[in-house]
Length: 385
Image (cartoon, rainbow, N blue to C red; front, side, top):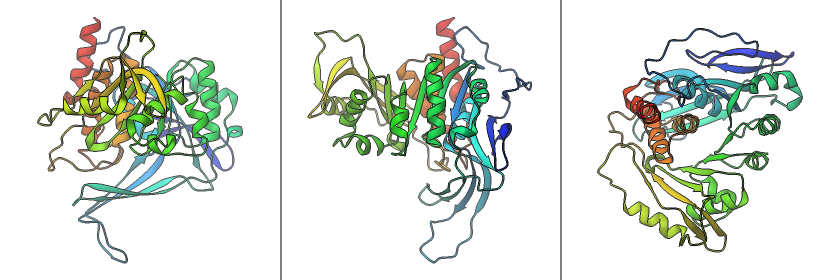
């Protein structure tokens, strides 16, 4: 678990803001000194920008095994690690290491059950299997005081929700909207209350199966068009595809009447053909602004992007746990830093790739000065100087 600062409590639970390595801030205004970054700052550098997250923070028990056990087998683990986890907790840890200032709204229990996850990492197939136990009792809006909510959002530049604690998350998101704080939603899978959160979102990052599941569209590109039509406030939606990279659909507001209309599935195929599979580092290919048509669904003006994942040598690939959370943390950083979409997707893929080189969701998360990502920060600072 990350270090935690209690905001308010009752007999059964603590409500917390996250305190991540080298990055501390709580509602009482206290701050610990953290090391200065070796990258010089400019007016476009988002360092110290406050990002508020609401959702899951857990304890992860990670056991590596030579091969996943068969039913009724007894096997020994080859290693064991215990560390903090949870979608929001992981993404905010990523942001802290990149230099931003995260605050976490979540719940751990004194007398009930705090959330935890057993994770079995198969060294043979390089896959992980998660067995999650949700916290009980769940956090409800009445347990978060108005003063704590306002303190959490004071000065915030961004808000992130993973779809957990839906009733509380909706209260936080509604207040964020009133304060004009941009919102990103992690749509991992359909959850209770997620639709209400999506209506308030500015950005959505979803898992490979979510778009088709939520929209009932027959292909991912068609599903992305459907999402932008159903959620008119969304600026872009990204679907992550693991080792196959990601696809992003960005809404365009400046498409004129002469803008070409194209079938979105055909457009994706044309972009996929341009992929250079011999390149191991993450890249991004984008289309021109077009009227993207999804048969039987509708048309939306926008740009389509295809981002590749890093091709990690098998000898370096350790564990994919939390790779999606690392990707989301990097996307939030990129939005705050005003990266171009192409740079954002390549940057996020690099951060996720770095994470996959260590066991657990947090151990491999890179720091801001890490050579694998420092070039993105330096390039942005140089271009805006």
